[in-house]
Image 1 (cartoon, helix red, strand yellow):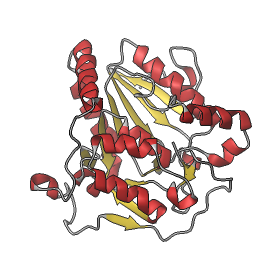
Image 2 (cartoon, rainbow, N blue to C red; image 1 turned 90 degrees about the horizontal axis):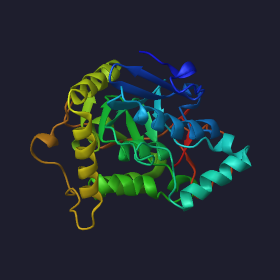
Image 3 (cartoon, helix red, strand yellow; image 1 turned 90 degrees about the vertical axis):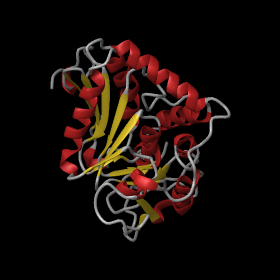
Length: 294
């Protein structure tokens, strides 16, 4: 890969992200593995620049979004933001006014975006799944929305998922909070992810193969096709995916036993940094997993 995080072609230096080019692929990688890739004030600022930088680069045709370490993305770092009142106020303002700048969709990225979910995706990390054009997940990836457990209301992340997925499983994830986790295989059955990669170590290779296949097509046609499908999805009156158990080929997970439980119960205590809960912040649930929200 070229033009790595510490010296991109724009001259901007990233400290919370890895931004690289690999042929026609632009990689946007969350890089706070010691904090489960939770978003602090610096990462929030860098995300907006990184999406724009890759979208403006004529050599990049596809953007792959993934994470370093054992987690994909676990939302806001409420502990850090509690110590940064200005950043906290700005994030609250953007949330209330629907002016978030976290994802490619938020930043009006025209190029195809592939999310490659490694490990835990929680709370605000769900934005990056809901807003990606295509989603791959490692076989050990897990999804949860812990907002209600810490006295908060899940809103835009869940709404984004409902826009493109069946209603009931999203509602279940919202209502069970940190007490259940949706497995990658079940997420595949429900259409939340398009491919489960096993073994997990092959996730980036699989994302690269998919991105290269996409990049063989004319970039202007890719942008036009993407825009048309998103407009159709967001148009009032477009039917939602059906609820209820999957049928046909989707009823069988791509790997492993068909008797795998729908979700994994969470029994380990929360050890995230203590911070006063807010209406737009929450925390993940497993020991060592960072607090999260939108």
